[in-house]
View 1 (cartoon, rainbow, N blue to C red):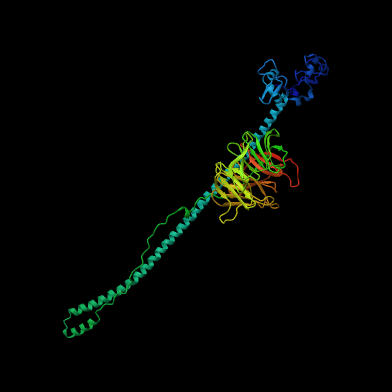
View 2: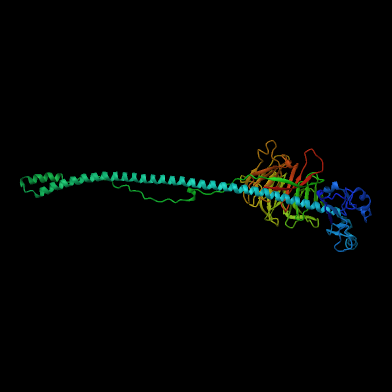
Length: 562
């Protein structure tokens, strides 16, 4: 491919290249000559094949900074020939010899080189757009992480200060309590001493009395006055007994000090806050696709870039390949499907109308067979396959008045059935969509068609742990009518809200962390959601209640912050 670079206007010579006398007014793109009016129509035309050359006014040189010549590309396999076409199957340029020898059977896939060039350029621009979107998403993520880092730094300072302040309070309380203990011990000592001192006084009096009596007896023993001896002894014998000491039988004692243990519970502990951080989210449209369907109820992106699209209103499942701005339909299956999921073998599990057993669609052969997953007597309404390869199915039976969610192993055994809560009350009304998060929680859109609904959050082997019924700021004027649910790459959960034309974003426990009004970017009636293997989001849309048109749109979107 040849490129002809124009000369900057400030460098354009005044004189014609051919006559060197007249002022130049024209430039030949092919031979790069600058010419006057006379030479353009005279001398220049004498050059071989000049009649096919592209001549422009020097005033337009700036507008032709890069001209493409698709006629002078030499064939790498046949040096004497120039490439004339592009083969889409082989993804290569071909010359006439290539066409006759190798590409005869590719006639329907041979296009003009210029068409191939623009097709490739469009793909590059589309890829560049995705790269720029990813860069934009990375920048937004970087800003969010820096903000998070700053917030955590500020939180760290506050927690450290709280600990130090609490330490001061603890020290003050401990000092105060130590003083109280000392005062209590002092008071105990006073009480004990008072009790003992009282008895000491009694004992002292007894000792004084005994000493006096002892002296009197001693004097009598030593007396030689026989005349008075007997009378004095008679009196003494009557008063010789000493009164019994009336002291306390026992005394209190100073209590022993038993040191207490300082534990986390009475000093304080670090506790992870069980609160959801509000997310800053953004959505940007990469591509818009027009379909001939009434509504898009399910989308499943595949690793080969193809997508499976379901419209249960039209009773139609199609496989399509996005090419540029078009969705090229590869195959169509006419059946009413309420839910579908992609297995590890890349086949599809389908919940088909009036069939209690899930159907399996072999994407290679197109054959539809019974799977091992049976929900009888309930009919399946939605399907999800979690990271453990367990199939989670919502089911309903109008006649029996039963609704349930089944968790089934790869061979079809029922591992868990969620139907009644711990109070034996029905959990579900009508399961419409299911997803799961990495902590094992199951999120179920539960809503009767036409009525308001909720997102029920189940935890493994337990009861309902949360029930999200919308938010007053979002559903102030219109009730929460969830339709479809999907898990994001960051392990949050997205839910489409039918009447508010918004997407609610919940954490893995079912708490609202953010939301987005898709009408702000021109997406109306968002119905179903699906993430591609590379992290882009497909949004399948519905229609207004009064519309009968078959023109539902699908958007490929990048989303950041969620």
